[in-house]
Image (cartoon, rainbow, N blue to C red; front, side, top):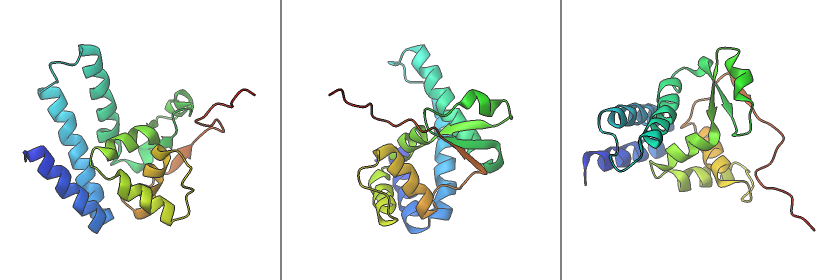
Amino acid sequence: MNVVDRYINLAKNEVIEDPEKGWDYLRFGFKANKLKMKLLPKKDLPKGYQKLEHLMMSLIADNLGKESGYVWGNIFAPCEIIQCFGLKTISVECLSCFLAGYHLEDHFIDCAQEHGIAPTLCSYHKVFLGAAQCGAVRYPRYAVTTSMTCGTPSAT
């Protein structure tokens, strides 16, 4: 088992045992991954994707410690409007993907459903809501969303 896998297991166990303390482990891991991406980019990944991956990891790693500097938003949220106020929008779907990198998705989905979130809700949102409900993700001052749904109406 390499050092990254060991850290992922350590962070996962910490989040499950003590979510508040686990939050610091998650943030440290995101920052370490951001540095790794910069110093050791994936050679088989095109440069554009490397840059995009680094930008997304930077958004998460750099802003999660500043609860007053970012807004939770879904992928349909108007992030351009939020930027006018000097705030960053962190996509709950993006954060859910990064949390899955710690193999915590099942734990967070269970936590969300134990708190009354419907089993039929989008998995990305259940992961995010479970992380927030159990205290592994700290609440920022603001959240924004739209009334658009993930699915499209079916034609009849």
